[in-house]
Amino acid sequence: AFQIEIYGQFNPPRFPTDPAQWEPLARRSVPSPNFMYVYGSATTGQTCRANLQAFESRKIIPRMLVDAKEKSTTVEILGKEYSSPLICAPVGVQNIMNPEGEEATAKACANLGIPYILSTASTRSIEQAAEASGDGDRWYQLYWPRTDEITISLLDRAWNNGYNVLVVTLDTFQLGYRPGDLDNCYLPFIWGEGCQIGFSDPVFQRLYAAGNYNDPNKPSSVFDLLSRAANPFQACKLLYNALTIKKSLAWVSEISGGNYKTWKDLEFLKEHWPGKILLKGIQSVDDAKTAASMKGIIDGIIVSNHGGRQVDGAIASLDALERITSDETVKGSHLTILFDSGIRTGSDVLKAMALGAQGVLIGRPMMWGLAMGGELGVEHVFKCLRADLEISMALAGIRDIKNVDRNILAFET
Ligand code: FNR
Image (cartoon, rainbow, N blue to C red; front, side):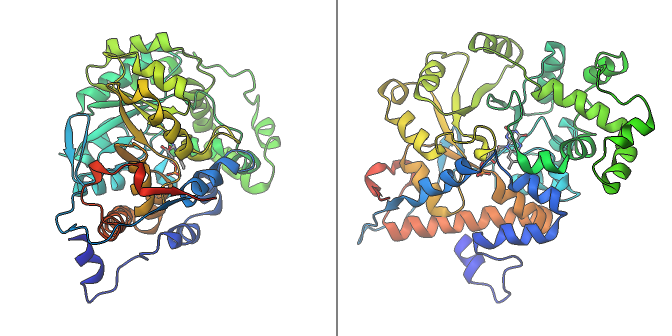
């Protein structure tokens, strides 16, 4: 069906079908600092590049005369069947790509039967995103707040609004060193404007109003505030956003301002979350083994380095996946293993599945889709990836994506 949509129409596709063109098109569609926030990664960008290179260095060995007429991309994730392994990655502040923000993404995913993951750093409330996602499958990504009362409030709201899987992101208890955003002094703007609705949590609002977040660095006057701006544009923005920025920084300090948690603390989440729990940001075999030992609390892991945005110089995510799924303890465990960081094409999906992923999350390409065309743009990106996956499978002689294993891969540097 996807092939027919791509090749069988008389009208040319609305957006480019070449994945390499989405990023430049997005760059032209939104203001430069917004684009840079999504495009950017930690320090030198080497981990972000390594993520892509890890895919390029593994090659598929196609098989011939395999009757792959009846091919299947169906997968089972956490006991539920999905028509493809594609999942929407949790990405924050989506209204910087398109004013429709998370609502567009949630609708696109619901239309295609793709699990939608709402970020804690969203520009729509838990309730608004739930409404947009309708009957669609939705999961909630937690940036684990410092204050337990806020954590409980977020978990209750998510569960009561139909989010049934909790994705706990472990790699961002503090933001990475991202020169693009630091130079632009842009984070408070993005998070200040962007998260206005996201930080609408009633418990946070109450604590904020009660003066729990008094910042010793807060400007003492308007002149003090303006003197902090690097240029007139920033000065205007600072003035305009003064109140929101203060609140936004309070929210950032709640959800990623150095919230040091331990494995033991995961029991607290389990006590307050009736559904399944996935740990996002696992990169080492030892951490995967610890997760495997926590049956009854942890249901799965997402092997990810946050798209290279946290530890610059960290191992490529696909290399981490290969190590983790080679471990006998992990292999024999109950863990569901998902993957992200670096997927750009259908054959990338195939390679991650061959190395043991049961599903894959799409980050930046989905945001380029959002910038290109809102809900339709996000749908377009997922449809192209799905078509590319189906065609690559057929041509490589792979009938069922569930049975694909590392024998289809050669490693070439
Ligand atoms: C992210 N990511 C992310 N992860 C998360 O758990 N919560 C979040 O709020 C965000 N926000 C976010 C914003 C932006 C702009 C990007 C690019 C990424 C990480 C995301 O879920 C995923 O791990 C990576 O994007 C995967 O890498 P690729 O697909 O972008 O290469």
